[in-house]
Length: 447
Ligand SMILES: [Fe+2]
Image 1 (cartoon, rainbow, N blue to C red):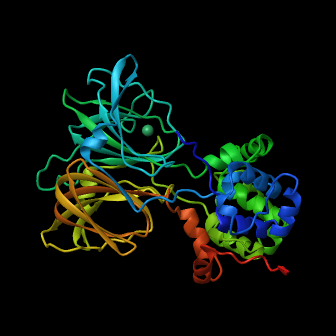
Image 2 (cartoon, rainbow, N blue to C red):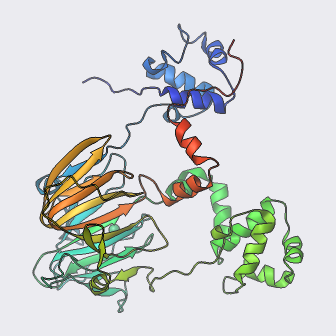
Image 3 (cartoon, rainbow, N blue to C red):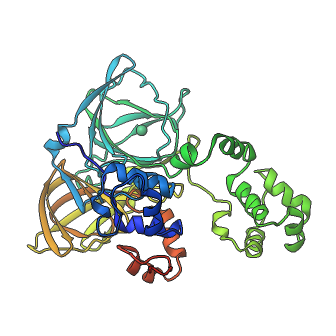
């Protein structure tokens, strides 16, 4: 088998020469004893892994910063049969507990899974330990199941996770809930019939910060600084201080007693009118939205449960479809979705959907066609019950036919944090115009 190797990306290579304020000439001078050729923008994409590692060492970066990566495709379609091929039984608590199936997802992404619930009705399902990654979970039927969230059961931690059995509205398949980080959960059957869920687990935005970016000392100090406090307040206090403003100075400037301001930072139960936070942010020139107290809709275990009856109440017309909401939380704005009903017999290439997120579409009934426009190439695919499709953000697409879908989106292709940066970027249209393939140097004389 041929060994796979990395390919240097000339735009990224040029950008890192610019960032390091160095030049090709300087790089070649440093590498002259190690390489028997000069690196140029013409030959850089043909160099081997050894040369890439030398260049990376010189630029003091990991090779991944300057190598090509496979961009995500426009879409990935997996048929019901292909999804069934991914089936693997999982044993837990000594019994066949789940069957897992993986839904189509670009390489390297956290993938949503479909689960058969196998734990029988007479057994209390053993809890898992939860996971950092937030999720939306949907009861997919055909039968109701039980969902458990704590050791000691109460009405919020032991619920019948129901399916909508009304034939007129059952395109709204079942109840759903948003599951925050490390919320424990487990499921069992309500009767002998099979119940399934889609667990739409996505990448955590704080994973790399908490695991990699902060060293142990910084991590421990962050945890200590926020112990028993609210993170938005702790970060505001530190933002003030990192800009050289003491609490005393700020208290004077916003005309608030020092005692009250200190209490606001130290006691998470204390309250302060948001006008003071806005004033502080005006003084330190920071965005108050980051630091305001937020109210979250959630229950005692941190989940936000959304009964299918609530979904039915939310039915609305949207473009050529009928849609109804599923659970979603402001704690993780990228995770969202809706049930969709398609009823359009016209034989047309329809592209009425265009989203700023990537999405999965899981076909829950009927026969549907998806129409996708990818770089002016018109693609139409037939979909049936149980098929699933992943589609990238900013892709024109649409559905015709007669059937229903569950759509869930997440932030793995573009997150709300990316959107924050896009909206903060000066002359964003100029940046969008220039950034791809930008080979300009940082402004030195090349001769
Ligand atoms: Fe899970």
